[in-house]
Amino acid sequence: MKFKSKQYAEALYELLEFAPEEKTSEVLEKFVETMFENGDFGKMDEILEIFGKEWDRKEGVVGAKIVTAYEISEEAVEVLREYIISRTGASRVDVRNEIDEEILGGAIVEYEDKVLDASLKKDIKELKELIVS
Image (cartoon, rainbow, N blue to C red):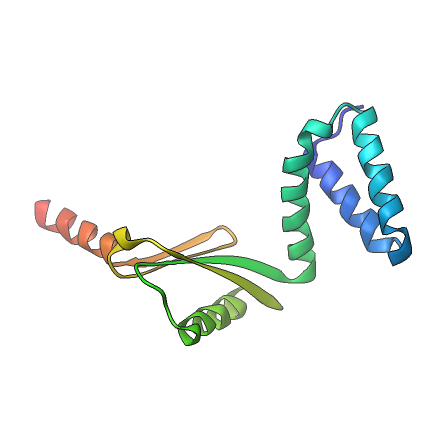
């Protein structure tokens, strides 16, 4: 029987969740052996990505990306972190800040399946479309 990457990821999560800490290495070895036996080791990157998202979801962790034209203060990051916590109910938000001078100003905030685009570039584009039409 062939398993999908999501099924492997969910199985790995459950195995690790209930395994005693001293058995973690053994569980991982057996998991990898099973993947080899099933000819599915090539799915490992996808499985680990899905596993990471599943782990974060069940642990109440949300990943977020903040794109700005320049480095922002830790206070601004904290305000955005608290906003995301209030919207998602997450216990923790892991924020990654990226610099992209092309957005000109403002910020683009991405978390879960949401994108909040408050960039100056987007505003200029919308204004241009309004003027042209």
